[in-house]
Image 1: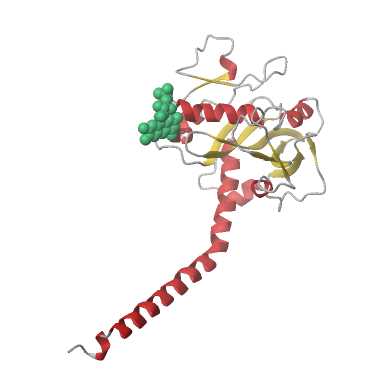
Image 2: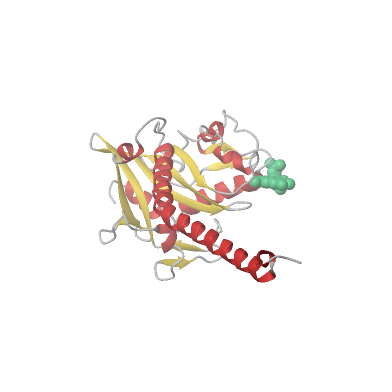
Length: 258
Ligand SMILES: Cc1cc2nc3c(=O)[nH]c(=O)nc-3n(C[C@H](O)[C@H](O)[C@H](O)COP(=O)(O)O)c2cc1C
């Protein structure tokens, strides 16, 4: 005969109590760790901005380094800074999902396959000796498996690339994931995005760039075995540097005033 402890009723009560205790522990941990996760996310974003700008972050205090940058909110349609939005609290990713703070892109416009574009974007400026030295632009676009989120850093001329880095994506490691490879990222600094007429000219080529080609200054090697991710990177650059992205802002920057 089974003891009272082994009855179906006791088993169910023990199982329910165990579920309750476990769910309290899991939800408690989620609530308790949330501020830490958010702080780590913010630190990671700052690290990526610094890396895109070509700064050494190893062993450095990220917060102190990041203090050199001034965040500004840009109205993408006019290409001018807005003063009534606080860059510290403006969340471009959230805004892109809010129909009141973003616009839907038509099929022809949406070359980066992002669906909607926020009306405002946060850029990060670094000045040296009173001159604009770096401008960091947030970029995103769909590749093969995922949306790539990253930062494009330009020199003060608004044309020369200082760096490109992605901080979030789900492309395949060893294939599309090679966008994180330092050797590939090292191909970007010094490349010119626009030609002498101010026309967008950046180009990712299949194979290797011919160093003797007059177009080489605008070209970067595509990722071998990952043409689809490469196309995603090229498309997002063309979108964000074009008239629906930072085109108006960069025109103003190059003309000497935003
Ligand atoms: C499991 C698997 C994962 C893949 N992941 C990627 C990827 O992340 N990015 C990519 O461009 N191609 C990826 N590919 C390869 C693409 O299907 C396609 O073959 C490739 O982009 C063509 O590039 P290529 O012309 O340089 O060879 C993957 C293929 C397989 C089978």
